[in-house]
Image (cartoon, rainbow, N blue to C red; front, side, top):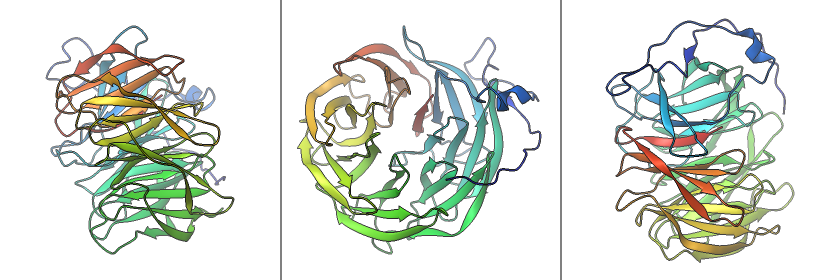
Length: 380
C-alpha cells in the first residue's frame, strides 16, 4: 500500500544521546538539529528500547540502549506533548514502531492523543500530536503507512490514519466498532503480517473482532469470533500470519490462521496452558519459530514453539523470571531475534534476556527507575 508523501518541513530534533552525567532526577537537554542524510541512509538507528512513562504530569518516551553483554541503559527522555494515566493501561501496543523503523507511535491515554516521532540517526524528532478519534487510546498498530489506534474508553472503537512522514491524517470513514456498544475492555489492535487483516482482542466479551483491510485503508467484513479461551489479551502475528493470542485466567496461548480474503480466524491450537499465572502479553521472533508470553501473576515468561502450520508446543512454562513479585507485562523481541526485553512493573524494571537458538532465555540483567504505570515496549 503506498501513499503520496509530501516533502517534510524542518522540525526540532531531540537527541537520543543527550544525557550527560547525572541521569538521576534530571531529563536530558534538547537542542535543535537537522540532518538531511537521515532520509537517504534509512533514517533510523538500531539497538534501542522505547518505553512510555504514561505519566499524568506529562508523558515521555524513555529510550534505552540495548546491550549484548548486560542490562539496557537509559539514554534519553523525550516529551510526547501528551499526558498519561499514571496507572497500567491493560493493553499491548501502547508504543509501536513502524515496520520500516522510521517512525515511533505513542499513545497518550489521558489526553486522548497519539504522538508520532521520526526515529533519526541522532534522536527522536516529534512530528505530530493528533486527536486519537476517541477516548483513552491504549494501543496502536502500523502497516505500510496505515495507522490504527484503539480507543478503549467510552463505547470503544478503532480509528485509522495515514502517516505522511510522521504527520498523521485521519482517514475518512476508517472507524471500526467492536462487538458491543460498551463494556468490551479491548486490549490490543494489530495488523496481520501481510496487512490484509486487522484484529482487536476484547477481554470482557471473550472475543476477537477482526476486519479485512481494503487497499484504501478502510475496513470491511467485520467478524466477531469467540476466543478459544477466556480473556484474550495480547497477541502477535508471525511472518507466516499465524496469530498467537494470550489468555489471562488460564495462563494459556492459542493460535489461529486466516483463510484467503477472510477476516475470520480459524483455531489451529486451542488453549495451551503454560502452568503459570495470568499470561497477558505475547511476542514472537522474526523467524516465526518462537513465541513468548509474559505471565503477570507469576513474574515470569513462558516459551512456545510455533510450527510452519501454526501449531503451538509448550517449550518451557517457566522459561525465565523477572524477579520475585516483580511482575511481567509488556515484552518485545529485538529485530535480530537475539534478545527479549520484559517490563516488570512491580519492580519498576525492564529485564533483558538473550534468546538461544533452542528458545532458552539467558539473563542479561535489569535496568530500573522507570515511573510507576509505565507502559508499552518497542525495540529496534
